[in-house]
Structure formats: C-alpha cells, structure tokens
Amino acid sequence: MFAHYKWLFALSCLLALSLLIAAGTGAYPMAPWDIPRILWNQEPGFEILVHIRLPRVILASLIGAILALAGASLQGLFRNPLADPGLIGVSAGAALGAAFWIVLGGSTFLGMWGTPTAAFSSSLLLTIALWKLAQIEGRVVTLTLLLAGIAMNSFAGAGIGLMTYLADEQELQTLTFWMLGSLGGATWSLVGVTLPFLLLALLILFRLAPALNAMSLGESEAYHVGVSVNRVKQWTVLGSALGVGAAVSASGAIGFVGLVIPHLMRMAISADQRFVLPGGALAGASLLVWADLLSRVVVSPAEFPVGIVTALIGGPFFLGLLLRYKRTLL
Image (cartoon, rainbow, N blue to C red; front, side):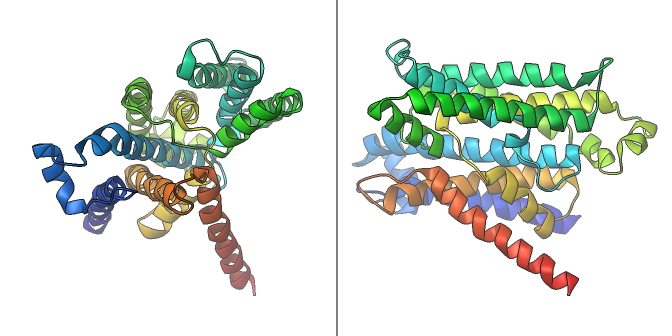
C-alpha cells in the first residue's frame, strides 16, 4: 500500500516538473527554476508566461487528466481493457457538433466560442440518446450500453463524413485540424469555461473508485456486496461524458490518452481503482503536456496537431503489448 502512495507522489512530482519545463520551452526559452521568480517579480518573459504558455499547459494538463480518468473508469465499468471514451460515442458526438458548426456557416456567430459550444452540446445530446437507447425497463445493461455506443459512433461518423463532403477548402482545412486535436487556441477564458465541467467530472469519477473495484468482480457480485449497479453505470457514463465532452470541445479530438494511461497504471501500480484513477489522472496530465510540447517545438514556428503525437505514442505501445501477448502464447 505504501508503495502505491509513493507512485502517486512520484507522478505528482513528474506533473509539476512537466508543467515548469513546458512553460519554459519555446521561442523565448526560460529555465524551469526561474519561472516562479519571473512570475513573482514580473521580470522579462512575464507576459509570455501569463498570456500564452500557462493557459496552454494548464489546459493540456486538465484535458489529459480527464481523458485518462474517463478511460480508466470506463475500462473498470465494462471490465474491458480496450474501452475508452470513444466507445460510448462522446468524442464522436463532440466532433459531429464541431463539424456541423464549422461547415454550415455558424462560425461567425458566438465567435471563438461557437465550435466548443456546438461540440459540447452535441456530445451531451448524444450521451442522453445513448442512455435512453441502453435502458431496458429502467435498467441499463452493459451489453446494450456498448451496442448503443457503437450505434452512436456510426451515426456521428456518417454525419462527420457528410460535413467533410460538403465543406469547401477552408472549412475542410479547419475541420481536419480540429479533428486531429490542437491546444493552440488555449486562453484563460477557455480554461475558465471548461474548468467547472472538468473539475465536476473529476469529482464524480474519483468517488466511484470503490464501486468500480466491486464491479470488477461482476455485476451480480457487486450487487450482493451492496453496490447500486445501475447507479454506478449512470454516474460513470455521466462523469465521462461531462469531462470528455468539455475536453474535446476545447481541444478537438485527442486519442489514445484514455486507452494507454490506464494500462500503464495497472502495470505499474495495481488494478485497484483507488490508485488507478488518481494515478491515471496525474499520468494523463503529464503525457498530454509533453505531447503538446512536442507538437509546438518539432516543426517550430509552425505547429503539429497534438492528436498525431498521442497516436504516435499509443500505436507503438499497443504493438508492444501485442508482441508481449504473443510471446506468452508460445
């Protein structure tokens, strides 16, 4: 047990160091240890830190945390290590709303808030539809929830494909860049708008850790030890939808964080959700901060979509898992 807490402490230190390094890296470099002094004394570089880099690294850490936490929670709920936020259609729903907004001429209304608002609203509507479809006589069955998620993903994919077909060259470029994920539009205003949703989702999912541990034994066993199975499903989907919808609306579609990080936490710490969830949130935050840092320095002064960076990290990771699994069968 003490070793588990040491892991959480180490991950907390890693996140703090990652934030300092990311905030100090760029066209105007700053040493990580100088950043607190620059902020305190408002020395040269203060404006760059406060108005450009800090909103971006903070938003990256929040989004990385909620994506990893939602992935770990859904994997615990479905008892499937390949479950992730995209499985229940939240990410695709947000992408569908953004695609409609970008292509159908709504970009002049609400200004920079139009796309995030449309993405979040769409993800929320698809989640409500998902829950209604998955209900059987007031009870949600895990299999029907999974099938409803697949149906929602298919529906959203068709809508995105239609918008891609209708888009002109400029709209297609905007839509493509948004679908690949980017934190280039991070501002304090965007952080302020998404922060309440992200914090509420974090609170909801953290409180579910003991119940998700019981769910890992099976639904019948969890019910017999006093867990309200239907309520756990409801709150897990609600928390994941709320957090991921807000995250995707702010940054676009960023994959693999919710899939890779829970695997790493179970391998490094344990399968106990009381440690997988907070450890996943800390590790997911660090991963996305580093991925975003790479996205803005690799092709500087241009910017690389952060979703491509996370995919380049996630692909080799799962290839390594596949090779490891094959060796166990020999």
